[in-house]
Image 1 (cartoon, rainbow, N blue to C red):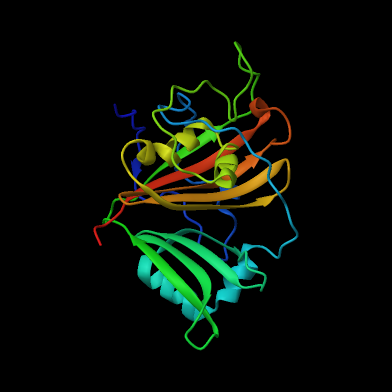
Image 2 (tube, helix red, strand yellow; image 1 turned 60 degrees about the horizontal axis):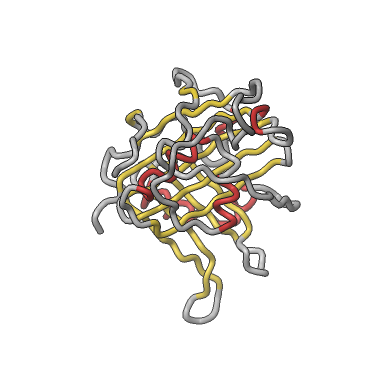
Length: 253
């Protein structure tokens, strides 16, 4: 049985280009808020995991480290740019890694080595069906604790999940910090027949306030969420979030 799909709006929604202000801190003119609805909507609601924090120059620094040729190549393949992040790759050598969500696809740039053993960048692109990118604005405001049981991440009571996408523990713990509606929008395709190929996330801030980015990419769909949360150090019902969730159909390759 299929779980119920939540409604989406056409287009990419609020956009901030590389080098601009963080999207969550910029009000989206003309974008109505969509309050958190039925939690879960047939998708799993995860528990929040422990987040680690390290000193880092920030995503603008690592975006600049990519160099103009790599940045231009990414935008040429998937642009115009809708959302993005960049950070130090997990390898010991400090080299940049970047994810770009564009109107025409998702691009992931990973450091590698060329045939001569020198530094190179591997660009992986997931193309979208033209004009298939949709968005929804999810807002959660701090309020009183829900009655009838302990608060869940983001508040609300989840419906029975139909399936659990094969997420890593690290990614599952990150998604658990998001409101249930955002969790549902991220995971919906992957509990309804799509095969999850890859996913990743990035966040900046501290224990009580975060800017977040996350994507899940499958054979048929890509989902992406970005935004800002505050009041995260206390009980879940005191947290406030404003997120833009996006979904696009993958083009046949």
